[in-house]
View 1: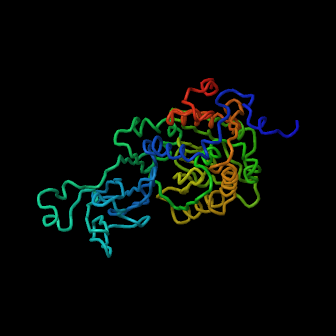
View 2 (view 1 turned 60 degrees about the vertical axis):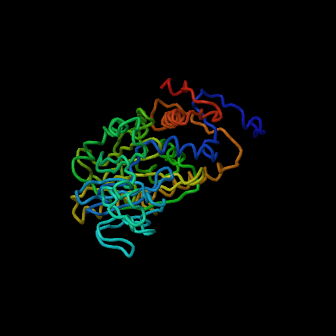
View 3 (view 1 turned 180 degrees about the vertical axis):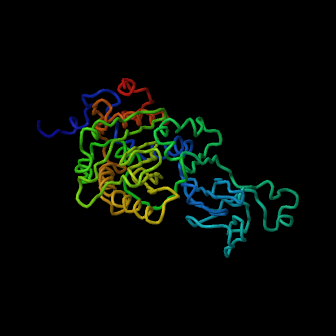
Amino acid sequence: MPARNESQWRATPPLQEGEWIDSRIYSDREIFEEENEKIFKHVWVPVCHESELPKPYDFRTTSIGREPVIICRGPDNQIRAFLNVCPHRGMLIERRPSGSFLEGQPSGNPTRITCMFHAWQFDLKGNCVYVAREKEGYQDRLCKENVGLRRLRCEVKFGGFVWVNLDDNPSVSLEDWASKPFQCLRQTLEEEPLEVFHYHKAVIGTNYKLWHDTNSEFYHDFMHYHNRVTGFNDAYFARKNEAFDHGHVVVGTFEVNYANYEGFESRAELSFPHLPPNQWYMIDLFPGFNFNLRGSALRVDVVTPLGPDEVMIEFRGLGLKSDTPEERMTRINHHNSIWGPFGRNLHEDLIGVAGQGTTMRPGTEPRNILHGRQENQTIHDENGMRHYYDEWGRWMNRSPREPDKAYSPSQAVAAE
């Protein structure tokens, strides 16, 4: 068939509804801003792991839906989250990515969260404990008891991850939101404490949903030479993409044959509790958080959309807190050989989504993105994407196929 002209290029594909989407949902700035308001400000976000706040007064900062957030461990050992915003003049309070409030800073007292602008101070429960010239400036019109930090919903669950929701009254509890997809790994992740041993982040010129997509299907593994020689067998192709409520998907396990690749050894010596050696499970949570347990290491991706064509992805590697130094080094080597910044797989995935980002920048012409493969809901099926974008349509009240129109349930998704 010859190359297509413009009308042919944009024609409706000969597929069912739900088996393609309009590329404007990746490139349109209005849609991106709406996603922050309608999705990211109302979903549960795994902002970090409790092991990254090992001591009282430790903190980390992040952002959700463009809102700056601070997570800290109080002297009572409880982890809490607040907006990282001073109630006085709206100043960003803490600029460091992480640290401790136990020691005093040039602009703050020990054990206090202090705004450097006018020295208002807060305890680790978010209470305001000091207002400069409180009586002189405000007389009896305002006092420190009126001006605490903005508290956020925060829970530690599913293997010690810290989950934050900007919505005071989320439509779904964290347990209802994620317990079913986590059922395959919950006993494994909660048997004993985990610990982060690796962290890096990447800012990529692509839409955050495209990173979800590459985590949601596995036939792009033909791009990964290492996977081709260690994993491509009948069991690999037979794995199922199982869809759950709220747009989540779980990819089932199989045994990875590391010995097939020169220079690699079996990872059976180090696994996780209740998990057979060399297994591989993946939990993909809407709208773009990924928990990938492969043999001896757990990788977790957290996306922070920065624009329609820019996303920050935070990558964490985790093992067991009880690891010996030798075991920890083995886990680190196993993790980094596949998923580190110079590993065999991760950079290839990033090249893929960066290439998509190049063709779907704001202002590029709309085109059809196909999600029509149907292969019995195995890893070569695109049911994970169809399921995800149907959920996206619900949250946004937009049709993924025609984003200028209101959402209606997809027949292709309903058929599955």
